Image (cartoon, rainbow, N blue to C red; front, side, top):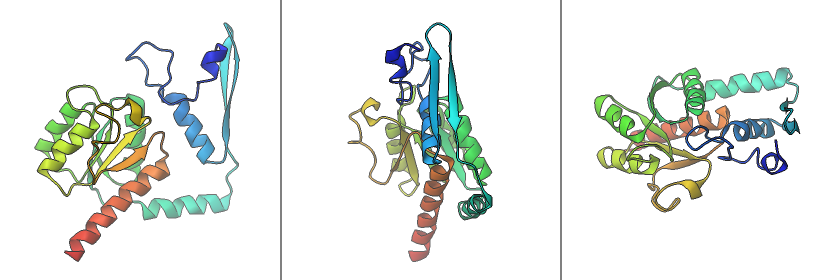
Length: 207
């Protein structure tokens, strides 16, 4: 890596690939996971020779394992259907695996247009969408369209950089939508989904 590339290697959405060939979220996601776990990432690189990425994680002990088991129980779903909209295959696969592991039914879409078709064909309990999407509907427009038809649907919008989002940053994000900043961890994703479903159930009981 050249010095100018190395300086930005962990920056969300920074990529040396051609437009459309890379999301720039790979190393930034790894960095975020490592930092939030109490670890770190380093890069050893020589221009023209190669690059080695070193991932450091703290040693787990028995107590950490018990805490993780408790968290999984607390955030486990009841087969609720989540419409997951993400055009990056790697990010979508990660989110789908997390949600599936937490006992949610995951319906995947690569664009807002595809997601809207799926929403019209099958019951959806929650919308989880990236903000930047290909096609005529970005994540915020998709959320507004779906909420116009189902105002009580829980919505989570994810983005690594609001300045890159279409239509003026956060100004047109639906009021009831929850914003999840990328890169996010499995724990963060599970917790926010569980929180929304808990609030929805509490609202129904209260009404």
